Length: 487
Ligand SMILES: Nc1ncnc2c1ncn2[C@@H]1O[C@H](COP(=O)(O)OP(=O)(O)OP(=O)(O)O)[C@@H](O)[C@H]1O
Ligand SMILES: [Mg+2]
Image 1 (spheres, helix red, strand yellow):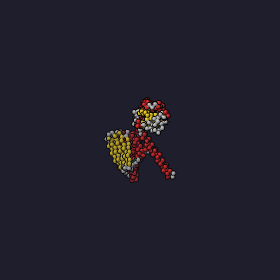
Image 2 (spheres, rainbow, N blue to C red; image 1 turned 90 degrees about the vertical axis):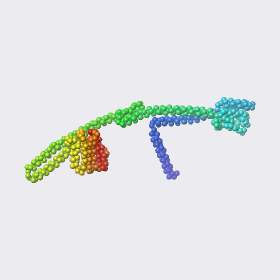
Image 3 (cartoon, rainbow, N blue to C red; image 1 turned 180 degrees about the horizontal axis):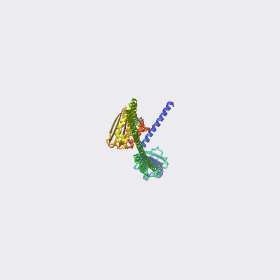
Image 4 (tube, rainbow, N blue to C red; image 1 turned 60 degrees about the vertical axis):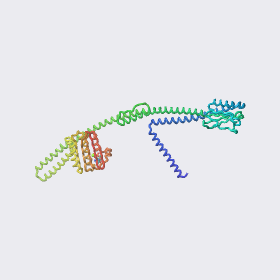
């Protein structure tokens, strides 16, 4: 074989192998799509049909062999006996007696359908035919035919297979007896047995199907129950449990599953408890932080602010007591510095905790914050709309203020936006805040995943603390932060 022929052979074999594997996979997929019950019933039915066919085929073959053998033996013996009995009437030339003898043989033996006695010259001396056959269906014998030896001839007729047995009379000097036996009765017996086997196979198959149905029902019931329970637990019902039906392998799975569900419930409860504790701690932390900010803001305002105010008043009084131009110029310079420092202190105090938030509410505090924001970020135009018909609970006001503050600070620091719009409204018991900038946007999913984003994370925490939720949308045209809090 040449090299290209060998490689073509290899490619052909590989293609055949791959084709076979593909067909096998597709067969497995198709079979796998059926339920366990259908599969088991299918196997039982297929096995019953195969066993039935094999049993019928074997029974027919064995019975056929045995019966044909038995027919052959019987035919030989009968033909021999008839030849012996026919010797006397032959010698007496009594054809009537010969015919009587043949008639008796046919009526006595159910398989015998004809008997013919031929003389040594092949002439018919006597012939008897049963109802199943006519004389012209039987082959003729001719003067040259061997009538001395015992012979067995088979031939087919409309009445089925015929076995003819020839036995010589007086060693052939008296002629020969031809006895025809039919397979008809034997075939009827075989058909009867076949029918019995078919009925038995059907009954066995039926019982097999019933038994397999009951068995698969017993086997699949706990699995179906387990699947149902799994769905219930998946849907949030942690009290759902699999029914314990038996102590077998599937029952063991059910017990393990129930244990797992119990553990899961325990873990969920522990988790829920620690979540409550975490929230409470966070609340306390935020409250403490706000209280501390409030204290420092007041302290800044009341001590440093007051001291600076007094300083300015003192310096104003000083200017009247001295006409020295150098002193006046220095005093004005110091007074300006004190004024600026006082402004910064006030701004710091407001940033820490605007007293307006406690005294006048969220809207006023945000107005003040926007004004300060404008000074810090002069390139950003802030558009603030607050539509709150009444004051909100203090915790909601504080948290919303901090969220908006962080949102605006982020927009000012990171977005390169020109415009910043802040909207607050209350409708149907829901307070909504929208902080929208037209900046360059950012990948908020990645930022939120990376636990570093304290600001955004804090906004989220604060929204959840007051039972609300925060969503961020960001793209090339800017960022929008939505907050929704139930009142
Ligand atoms: N409006 C925005 N536009 C563009 N990028 C933003 C915006 N808001 C947040 N980001 C991006 O998300 C990051 C995380 O924001 P986050 O507020 O959590 O942290 P930060 O502002 O960097 O620091 P801080 O803890 O002081 O708030 C920012 O560093 C910035 O890159
Ligand atoms: Mg930030």
